Length: 353
Image 1 (cartoon, helix red, strand yellow):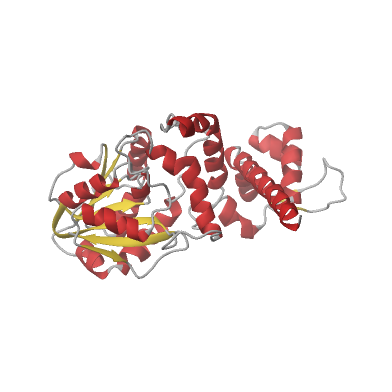
Image 2 (tube, one colour):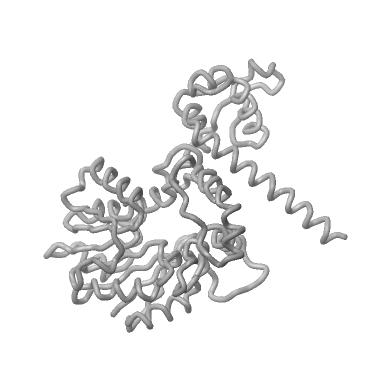
């Protein structure tokens, strides 16, 4: 019974955590955190007026956030309509500042998107197909790697690979292809860190590419950063000094073909940089919280997105190093270097033809 009770208690905590992320989704989408951070403490009526929401909803959200410890209340004994709530300064990077590497409020958005697919996912599990693609709205699409790329890709990760860093700084100016570039922040980060390079990002998502083009224009980079709605197979062969595949390879239905195409895009002495989820070398059970986290997203998003193609490798989010090495070798690469650094979330691989 001890194990039974422990599991029951665990699922209760899991439910509370899921509900908390849902509350974070509301705070992010309605601008409630941003109002508390930018306009200061507020009563429920003041917050409702600032953000144009209903006062009773605002009061319930503020009380829930306070009892959860995400925000603070000045006087717990004050009448409900009089209580003033504030967002601690230490919580601003996590809940408000999208430029900070600690920003996590996007997780509420991602959870909402994932849960919306569950009825379709039940059917997909039965048929083996992929569920229908999800539109960006109403939840929006979280740019969850934006701050990480802008703060670390060009400032820490690429400089940590001496041969790549040297080529990106050298003349003639290097050319970079960013495969599965999403909304473009990886391409932009490379261009900002290396002022002479040109970067060409490709992605199959029209909405993502439209957003990428806007982002490049806002940062004054359209002369060196271009984007196209395309897959890598249609890109110029033998033209690029570096091809990046950043947190995308495990999502691809045919990773060997993608890597083979990336290899063909390389100029002499070029290489491919793959950044993907950091996972253990081998399957263990039970595993670390990080491994559990990756498997959770694999069940709901990464694996389903690659299903439906009869030729799919059906990798899922947990792509172990030996599996990636096998893909690279089959694609014609002679060497797969597991780079001697990682982050809590990502592992780094340099593929050499």
